[in-house]
Amino acid sequence: ENAQLKDIIAHAKEYGFVYPSSEIYDGLQAVYDYGAYGVELKNNLKRLWWETMTRVHENIVGIDAAIFMHPTTWKASGHVDSFNDPMIDNKDSKKRYRADVLVEEHAAKLENDGKVEEAKQLTAALARLLEAEDLAGVRDLIINEGITCPISGTSNWTDVRQFNLMFSTQVGSVADDASTIYLRPETAQGIFVNFLNVQKTARMKVPFGIAQIGKAFRNEIVARQFIFRMREFEQMEMQFFVRPGTELDWYQKWADVRMRWHLALGTPAEKLRKHDHEKLAHYANAAMDIEYEFPFGFKEVEGIHSRTDFDLKSHQEYSKKKQQYFDPEVNQNYIPYVIETSIGADRLFLLTLCNAYTEEKTEDKTRVYLKFHPAVAPVKAAILPLTKKDGLPEKAQEIVELLKYDFNIIYEEAASIGKRYTRQDLIGTPFCIAVDHQTLEDNTVTIRHRDTTEQERVPISELHARIAEATSF
Ligand code: ATP
Picture (cartoon, rainbow, N blue to C red):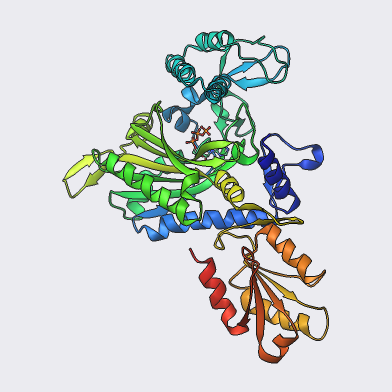
């Protein structure tokens, strides 16, 4: 794994952000748990997304649909028949791979070696074969290109098979086909099946949106790169229902709105890019990803898709219930078209962590700190009495009382002040507030700023407003 990613994974574990799931049993592949600071950071990211979606836009409301859905949902959505990845096994190492990813990685290697044209032809050939569902052809491509298993080094490959990514389980006590249900692989369908419920009860008029945050599950064949690709993860999706014919304008608009959101969170423009899909999913008439430059390259964090009326139309067909909207402005009944913005909360978390992780080399040592936007920082301020005596802890506790109902605050009195500053740097706390003897005389404290390490003297009465201003978004 990439050296910088390794440092970030180690840091995330050491400082209470992310642990492997059930680690005492050596973990569970592609499943992770969030620790004390991780859960705060993740909640902050989810809250910011939720608030910008549902509060800033008066025509977007939220829902919280169940993870389990009627099994026909996934017939209608196309997931039962086509939510597949092509997989291939190496007979010597017994390792399983995604056949398409093996080819793509090989193409990336060719490109790196300056063989740009060859790489292009290879990706095009792969796209053609996948389009035609020619799995034997994909295998031939792997053999002809001499692609070998990174573990065994051999090209002793099995056939390529389709592998459905949905997890299934049984409801009730009888295990027959009819009782098989799925763990949702995306949150979107919970919105589509509730389209009319929400439209009517929240009295929405097209164009309007429905937002949702929730868990999704995919039995990913290759699980790598930490929380980038997980088997259990969280999605933040918004489906925006529009009049047919206006969808491509809304698609551009939402792509721009979402890009601005990422920039406002402090992600530098040069680390973000839009990437149009060459190959469109069965339900889309336009699609792009917002990509971020992770330590392992530019990769998708968010998808913006123009899903046409595919989902609602299909649910209408399978459920035999009309999924139409009467638009009084044009005096017409129609099935709305849908623009979707879909981002993984965990992927956004990884982006935020990668972006914040800073190593600053001075002559004799390296200073590591997490440069979070104060709005998402897990802890907003640490209150630190200079010593454990002379009434300083009591004075510091008064400040904690003043702030703790509005901000996540830490109080710490152990160790030297320098060590305590360092500890807060490592979890990304933007403000350290030191209480000293002068505080007892004039009710002022020292604020030490994380990014610059500069200190300033501030009256206690100004603290609340200062922190509120810095942590607002
Ligand atoms: P990929 O190509 O990376 O598999 P995708 O195109 O299948 O992703 P979508 O179905 O568009 O992804 O899902 C929308 C978003 O959900 C993605 O942009 C990503 O942020 C998140 N996501 C999807 N799969 C995973 C996963 N296995 N682990 C974590 N986040 C995921």
